Structure formats: C-alpha cells, structure tokens
Image (cartoon, rainbow, N blue to C red; front, top):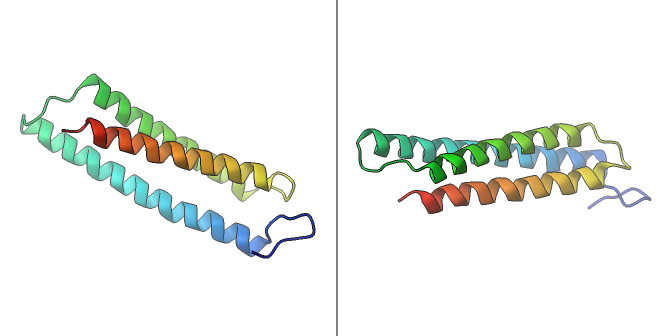
Length: 109
C-alpha cells in the first residue's frame, strides 16, 4: 500500500478501493434480487407463505444497500483527513448489507 506521509492511501489506491466496493455492491444487489425473485416465485406457486419477518428482512436489506451506496458516494469525495473515517463507515455498511442478506436466506425455507 502506498501511503502519504500522514499514512493515508494515495489516489489510485482510494479509487481501487471504491471500485472494488462498487463491484461487490453490484453483486450483492444481484444476489438480493435473485433471492427476492425466488421468494416471489415460491409465493406465487403457493409453496410458501411469505411471513412479515421475511418482508421486514427484505426491507432491511434494501435499506442497508441504500445506506452503503450513500456512504460510498461520500467516500468518493472525501478529503485525505476524512478518508480513513469514511472508509470505516463504508466497511461497516458493507457488513450490514452482508448480515441483512444472510437474514433473508435464513428466513427463506
């Protein structure tokens, strides 16, 4: 990792981190949409009855993804002093997205 004298990553490293999260975010959105599609199909075929818990888990995942996108947008324009803090916020939001999707999968029979 190339860092400045203050220990912050250089611009190319910042850009690489942001791009890697953007790619992962696209993958998570696709996974969430796939899971929602399977839930909807099973519900339409009356194979399952979609519970309120499952619906709340879906809404939580959607909200977590929106929050991650907002944090990522802020990170992209962060200055050197705030970048480490903003990166930590993105990483925490990423963990929330992962956990929210795991909850959906756990509630889907």
